[in-house]
Image (cartoon, rainbow, N blue to C red):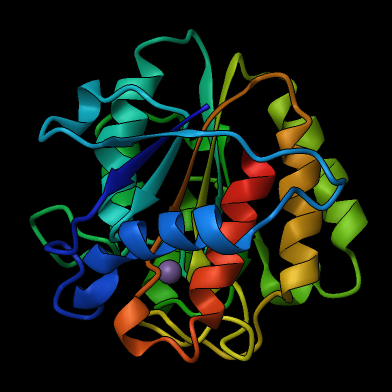
Length: 245
Ligand SMILES: [Mn+2]
Protein backbone atom coordinates (compact mmCIF):
# COMPACT_ATOMS: atom_id res chain seq x y z
CA UNK A 1 0.00 0.00 0.00
CA UNK A 2 1.04 3.53 -0.63
CA UNK A 3 1.41 6.10 2.16
CA UNK A 4 1.36 9.70 0.99
CA UNK A 5 2.82 12.47 3.14
CA UNK A 6 0.90 15.75 3.12
CA UNK A 7 2.96 18.22 5.19
CA UNK A 8 0.56 21.17 5.14
CA UNK A 9 -0.54 23.26 8.13
CA UNK A 10 -1.52 26.55 6.47
CA UNK A 11 -5.24 25.99 6.93
CA UNK A 12 -5.05 25.26 10.66
CA UNK A 13 -5.84 28.94 11.41
CA UNK A 14 -2.55 29.19 13.30
CA UNK A 15 -3.79 26.63 15.86
CA UNK A 16 -1.67 23.64 14.88
CA UNK A 17 1.19 24.98 12.77
CA UNK A 18 3.71 22.25 13.68
CA UNK A 19 1.47 19.56 12.22
CA UNK A 20 3.33 19.97 8.91
CA UNK A 21 6.08 18.01 10.68
CA UNK A 22 3.65 15.15 11.41
CA UNK A 23 4.12 13.10 8.22
CA UNK A 24 7.92 12.72 8.48
CA UNK A 25 7.80 12.00 12.23
CA UNK A 26 5.04 9.39 11.84
CA UNK A 27 6.63 7.63 8.86
CA UNK A 28 10.03 7.52 10.60
CA UNK A 29 8.42 6.09 13.74
CA UNK A 30 6.55 3.51 11.66
CA UNK A 31 9.74 2.43 9.92
CA UNK A 32 11.88 2.30 13.05
CA UNK A 33 9.68 1.44 16.02
CA UNK A 34 6.53 -0.37 14.90
CA UNK A 35 7.81 -3.88 14.32
CA UNK A 36 4.61 -5.55 13.14
CA UNK A 37 0.85 -5.26 13.21
CA UNK A 38 -0.83 -6.41 16.42
CA UNK A 39 -1.63 -9.79 14.82
CA UNK A 40 2.08 -10.26 14.09
CA UNK A 41 1.84 -9.69 10.35
CA UNK A 42 4.51 -7.75 8.56
CA UNK A 43 4.18 -4.06 7.85
CA UNK A 44 4.98 -3.26 4.22
CA UNK A 45 4.52 0.10 2.57
CA UNK A 46 5.81 2.51 0.01
CA UNK A 47 6.08 6.24 0.53
CA UNK A 48 5.19 9.14 -1.65
CA UNK A 49 5.12 12.90 -1.17
CA UNK A 50 1.88 14.64 -2.13
CA UNK A 51 1.92 16.83 -5.20
CA UNK A 52 0.33 20.26 -5.06
CA UNK A 53 -2.89 19.04 -6.60
CA UNK A 54 -4.39 17.00 -3.78
CA UNK A 55 -7.64 16.27 -5.58
CA UNK A 56 -5.78 14.25 -8.17
CA UNK A 57 -3.47 12.53 -5.68
CA UNK A 58 -3.25 8.75 -5.73
CA UNK A 59 -2.62 6.71 -2.63
CA UNK A 60 -4.11 4.57 0.12
CA UNK A 61 -3.23 6.34 3.37
CA UNK A 62 -2.57 10.07 3.57
CA UNK A 63 -0.77 11.55 6.56
CA UNK A 64 -1.30 15.22 7.39
CA UNK A 65 -1.02 17.91 7.98
CA UNK A 66 -4.12 19.73 9.12
CA UNK A 67 -7.62 18.36 8.59
CA UNK A 68 -8.45 20.65 5.65
CA UNK A 69 -6.49 18.22 3.42
CA UNK A 70 -9.40 15.78 3.60
CA UNK A 71 -11.50 18.18 1.52
CA UNK A 72 -9.50 17.91 -1.73
CA UNK A 73 -8.56 14.29 -0.99
CA UNK A 74 -12.19 13.23 -0.58
CA UNK A 75 -13.21 15.29 -3.60
CA UNK A 76 -10.75 13.45 -5.82
CA UNK A 77 -11.69 10.14 -4.25
CA UNK A 78 -15.43 10.70 -4.76
CA UNK A 79 -15.05 10.98 -8.55
CA UNK A 80 -14.27 7.26 -8.73
CA UNK A 81 -17.49 6.04 -7.09
CA UNK A 82 -21.26 6.18 -7.58
CA UNK A 83 -22.03 6.41 -3.87
CA UNK A 84 -18.95 7.48 -1.89
CA UNK A 85 -19.07 8.04 1.86
CA UNK A 86 -17.01 9.08 4.82
CA UNK A 87 -16.43 8.02 8.43
CA UNK A 88 -14.68 10.68 10.50
CA UNK A 89 -13.12 10.25 13.94
CA UNK A 90 -12.72 13.69 15.49
CA UNK A 91 -13.38 15.61 18.70
CA UNK A 92 -14.91 18.31 16.49
CA UNK A 93 -17.57 18.16 13.79
CA UNK A 94 -15.67 20.65 11.56
CA UNK A 95 -18.83 22.33 10.27
CA UNK A 96 -18.13 25.75 11.72
CA UNK A 97 -19.68 28.60 9.80
CA UNK A 98 -17.23 31.43 9.99
CA UNK A 99 -14.42 31.41 7.52
CA UNK A 100 -15.02 32.12 3.87
CA UNK A 101 -12.04 30.01 2.97
CA UNK A 102 -11.62 26.33 3.58
CA UNK A 103 -9.99 25.51 6.90
CA UNK A 104 -9.54 22.59 9.28
CA UNK A 105 -12.68 23.58 11.21
CA UNK A 106 -15.17 23.68 8.33
CA UNK A 107 -14.02 21.17 5.68
CA UNK A 108 -16.98 18.81 6.32
CA UNK A 109 -19.38 21.69 5.76
CA UNK A 110 -17.56 22.66 2.55
CA UNK A 111 -17.86 19.08 1.23
CA UNK A 112 -21.59 18.96 1.94
CA UNK A 113 -22.42 22.51 0.80
CA UNK A 114 -20.37 21.86 -2.35
CA UNK A 115 -22.46 18.81 -3.18
CA UNK A 116 -19.42 16.54 -3.05
CA UNK A 117 -20.70 14.53 -0.08
CA UNK A 118 -24.32 13.58 0.60
CA UNK A 119 -25.31 14.38 4.21
CA UNK A 120 -26.60 10.82 4.63
CA UNK A 121 -23.21 9.43 3.55
CA UNK A 122 -21.14 10.79 6.41
CA UNK A 123 -20.93 9.78 10.06
CA UNK A 124 -18.88 11.54 12.74
CA UNK A 125 -17.52 9.71 15.78
CA UNK A 126 -16.04 11.02 19.03
CA UNK A 127 -17.56 14.53 18.93
CA UNK A 128 -17.25 16.42 22.21
CA UNK A 129 -16.26 20.02 21.48
CA UNK A 130 -18.42 22.08 19.18
CA UNK A 131 -20.17 25.39 18.92
CA UNK A 132 -23.95 25.05 19.52
CA UNK A 133 -24.47 26.32 15.95
CA UNK A 134 -22.57 23.29 14.67
CA UNK A 135 -24.87 20.81 16.44
CA UNK A 136 -27.83 22.74 15.00
CA UNK A 137 -26.36 22.53 11.51
CA UNK A 138 -25.73 18.78 11.87
CA UNK A 139 -29.31 18.23 13.05
CA UNK A 140 -30.74 20.36 10.23
CA UNK A 141 -28.85 18.30 7.68
CA UNK A 142 -29.74 15.08 9.54
CA UNK A 143 -26.08 14.14 9.74
CA UNK A 144 -25.35 11.09 11.87
CA UNK A 145 -22.88 11.49 14.70
CA UNK A 146 -21.80 9.70 17.85
CA UNK A 147 -20.44 11.85 20.64
CA UNK A 148 -17.54 10.61 22.76
CA UNK A 149 -20.13 10.05 25.52
CA UNK A 150 -22.21 7.89 23.11
CA UNK A 151 -19.14 5.76 22.44
CA UNK A 152 -18.26 5.33 26.12
CA UNK A 153 -19.24 1.79 27.16
CA UNK A 154 -20.76 1.08 23.73
CA UNK A 155 -17.80 0.69 21.41
CA UNK A 156 -19.01 -2.57 19.86
CA UNK A 157 -22.58 -1.30 19.31
CA UNK A 158 -21.37 1.92 17.71
CA UNK A 159 -18.93 -0.03 15.55
CA UNK A 160 -21.74 -2.31 14.34
CA UNK A 161 -23.70 0.78 13.36
CA UNK A 162 -20.71 2.10 11.42
CA UNK A 163 -20.41 -1.20 9.57
CA UNK A 164 -24.13 -1.12 8.75
CA UNK A 165 -23.83 2.51 7.60
CA UNK A 166 -21.02 1.62 5.20
CA UNK A 167 -22.84 -1.29 3.55
CA UNK A 168 -24.62 1.01 1.07
CA UNK A 169 -21.40 2.73 0.00
CA UNK A 170 -19.29 1.59 -2.94
CA UNK A 171 -16.33 3.65 -1.75
CA UNK A 172 -15.61 4.31 1.91
CA UNK A 173 -13.13 6.94 3.10
CA UNK A 174 -11.90 6.87 6.71
CA UNK A 175 -10.55 10.10 8.20
CA UNK A 176 -8.94 10.20 11.65
CA UNK A 177 -8.17 13.42 13.48
CA UNK A 178 -5.81 12.37 16.27
CA UNK A 179 -7.69 14.69 18.65
CA UNK A 180 -10.49 12.13 18.79
CA UNK A 181 -8.26 10.48 21.40
CA UNK A 182 -8.15 11.77 24.92
CA UNK A 183 -5.19 14.14 25.35
CA UNK A 184 -3.97 11.81 28.11
CA UNK A 185 -3.07 9.42 25.27
CA UNK A 186 -2.34 11.88 22.49
CA UNK A 187 -1.28 15.33 23.72
CA UNK A 188 0.57 16.30 20.55
CA UNK A 189 -2.20 18.16 18.75
CA UNK A 190 -3.56 21.69 18.45
CA UNK A 191 -6.80 21.30 20.38
CA UNK A 192 -6.58 19.13 23.47
CA UNK A 193 -10.15 18.12 24.28
CA UNK A 194 -10.68 16.18 27.52
CA UNK A 195 -12.98 13.18 27.61
CA UNK A 196 -11.89 11.49 24.41
CA UNK A 197 -11.56 7.92 23.24
CA UNK A 198 -8.82 5.64 24.54
CA UNK A 199 -6.14 4.30 22.22
CA UNK A 200 -7.60 0.78 22.63
CA UNK A 201 -11.08 1.97 21.65
CA UNK A 202 -9.82 3.74 18.53
CA UNK A 203 -7.75 0.70 17.56
CA UNK A 204 -10.86 -1.49 17.88
CA UNK A 205 -12.74 0.76 15.44
CA UNK A 206 -9.78 1.01 13.08
CA UNK A 207 -9.25 -2.75 12.88
CA UNK A 208 -12.96 -3.45 12.28
CA UNK A 209 -13.22 -0.76 9.60
CA UNK A 210 -10.01 -1.98 7.98
CA UNK A 211 -11.79 -5.32 7.40
CA UNK A 212 -14.47 -3.67 5.24
CA UNK A 213 -13.99 -4.45 1.56
CA UNK A 214 -15.26 -1.04 0.46
CA UNK A 215 -12.66 0.86 2.51
CA UNK A 216 -10.62 2.45 -0.26
CA UNK A 217 -8.78 5.36 1.33
CA UNK A 218 -7.79 6.63 4.78
CA UNK A 219 -6.11 9.62 6.32
CA UNK A 220 -4.69 10.58 9.68
CA UNK A 221 -4.28 14.26 10.52
CA UNK A 222 -3.45 16.97 13.09
CA UNK A 223 -0.48 15.27 14.79
CA UNK A 224 1.92 18.00 15.93
CA UNK A 225 5.36 16.65 16.94
CA UNK A 226 6.41 20.12 18.19
CA UNK A 227 4.01 19.97 21.15
CA UNK A 228 4.10 16.22 21.71
CA UNK A 229 5.20 14.55 24.95
CA UNK A 230 8.03 12.04 24.47
CA UNK A 231 6.75 11.23 20.95
CA UNK A 232 3.74 9.40 22.43
CA UNK A 233 1.27 10.91 19.95
CA UNK A 234 3.59 10.23 17.02
CA UNK A 235 3.91 6.61 18.11
CA UNK A 236 0.14 6.12 18.44
CA UNK A 237 -0.29 7.64 14.99
CA UNK A 238 2.35 5.30 13.55
CA UNK A 239 0.64 2.32 15.15
CA UNK A 240 -2.74 3.30 13.70
CA UNK A 241 -1.22 3.74 10.24
CA UNK A 242 0.47 0.34 10.66
CA UNK A 243 -2.87 -1.32 11.38
CA UNK A 244 -4.41 0.34 8.32
CA UNK A 245 -1.75 -1.07 5.99
MN1 LIG B 1 -10.47 17.97 15.55
